[in-house]
Image (cartoon, rainbow, N blue to C red):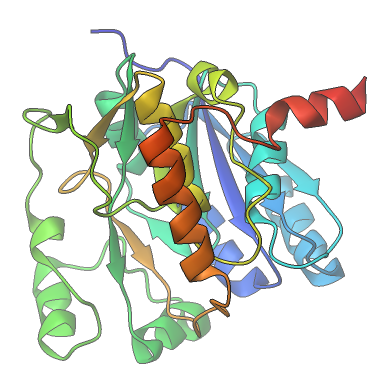
Amino acid sequence: MRHAQTISVVITTYNRPDALEAVVRACFMQNDKNFEIIIADDGSTANTRACIERLAQGSPVPVHHVWQPDQGFRAAMARNRGTLAATGDYIVFLDGDCIPQRDFIARHRALSEPGCLVSGSRILLDEALTRRVLDEGVDVAVAPLATRIGWRLRGHMNKVLQLAVRWPDLGRTTKKFSWRRIKSCNLGVWKSDLERVNGFDESFTGWGHEDSDLVVRLFHSGVLRKDGAFATEVFHLWHREAQRDQESSNRRTVLERAAAKVTQATVGLREHADEAA
């Protein structure tokens, strides 16, 4: 089986440099350093730029910053711009509030397979543990299992078994589409597959389901979904929920496209290529 050789990690961020720094530093500590980092910035202020410049100076891997003006929630556009800036043949999308474990890249590389995407998994941290991570430098990625179990018992994280067990790459691929656990905060996709469906659809407005739309379109173009649970878990730092005014209408759009077996984004990667031309 052919696995990804060159990997680009596209990290989306918006005005949360403390969380971004924790995520990027965890990327620096990967046991597989054959990758690059693209920071896909949805309009952050100068504080984030200064943070990225500081991190890039001591980075063991290439770090690039792709910025766009702040015109509301435009994560789909940020991810598309990050994809266009990436040199890897395999893209791992990661949010700027999701701290990867030390073998995150290695596990995504091992699970990468032509004709498949990998829908990763996450573990939610509560506000108290998030504050310890950001203010005290607590490294959740290397905490002993006993400590993690204690956090779980006290309600500081929502699951722990996934941190104690690693499943082999068996029985992960499904030929039926499922909405379950679709999160672009932890998603591995071949760049050629993204190009074939025109990337994320920027016509979605507000928060919600642009990641589900991408996976639906990839599925209808022939890309199978592989479950990355018990292999690719990241620690999702607590934050207040974003406004979800458009969530219902976005979901309805995805359902309609799924029924129609749509494969192409209305506004996506090609439109940026046209702009550049």
